Amino acid sequence: MKHLLSIADLSREEILSVLDTAVSMHEVQHRDVKKLPTLRGRTIINFFFEDSTRTRSSFEIAGKWLSADTINLTGKGTSVSKGESLRDTVLTIGAMGVDMMVVRHPASGAPAQIADWVGCSVVNAGDGTHEHPSQALLDAYTLRRALGDLEGRHVAIVGDLTHSRVLRSNLLCLQRLGARVTLVAPPTLMPSGIAAWSGADGFATSYDLDEVLPTVDAVMMLRVQRERMSGGYFPTAKEYAVTYGLTPRRLGLLQDHAVICHPGPMNRGLEISADAADAARSLVLDQVSAGVAVRMSILYHLLAGEGSQE
Ligand code: CP
Image 1: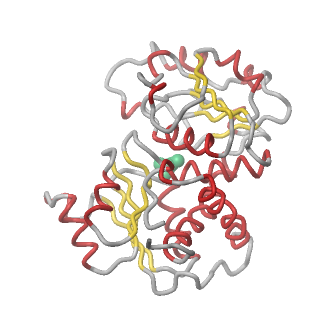
Image 2 (image 1 turned 135 degrees about the horizontal axis):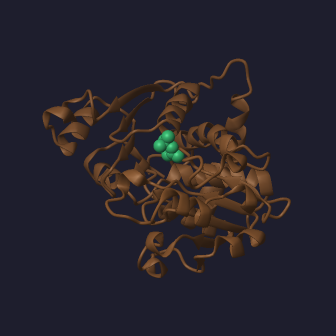
Image 3 (image 1 turned 120 degrees about the vertical axis):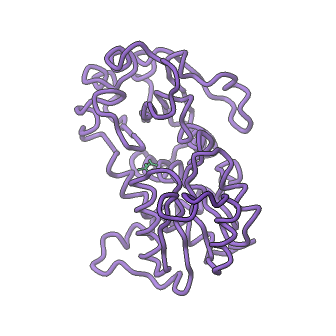
């Protein structure tokens, strides 16, 4: 494995291998001295052309805890703002001899294009509405810790599906792990042609959240991405919260063991109520914690593990 660009590129065995390594990486988080020598002498550039709190900081922490030299760049503050092209920018960084670029970009496919241009490993840290593979891996890790083996488990992914890269990666990842997935959204936010998505088959769709909630082991609420919406996808925020939000009333529809996920950042009061976000069954902060361990595992597999750089 040289790059992590899409969950579609990973077999079930490769996903499980990343998740298993993350278990031992997670132990580092609870040590006084959070440092392993694994990536000493390696250099990782985190190149974020879009804003991020969780992904950027956890990739940086993951690299540092594995003793890599990590450098953060954003579009602002680099020569991108002077008009330098993406290709010239990444070739310039690549010429410095870095071992990995972790890239977030608003254009779907940008990390894959960069991987064609440069010689180092490339990790997709979220590209447009395409994929967010490290998020799906950390979500799977978190769900496995809460529920055990995901084979046959029922997961609902709910909300702004049209604009969500988290959806696409999670759908592929959960299906590889044997989970049953139901996608729930208003008709305006259900992606057109969703049944034809390559590599993702056998999932259900619904417009009725109340009907689906009592049947799930986990519900994954997705953020309403207003910054990607050019038109009106729902009449008002209040109407969306009432029909598709995880409200206090809807918490009562969940089975006792069912858990709640949200990749963040959350719109409290819109897709998720404060009661749901802060409930004992909410895994939101577990997902953040797992993010560091899973990203350590990703860096390890790409830069140091068996088959890395192939
Ligand atoms: N979940 C996620 O990608 O969050 P950030 O945008 O804060 O990285």
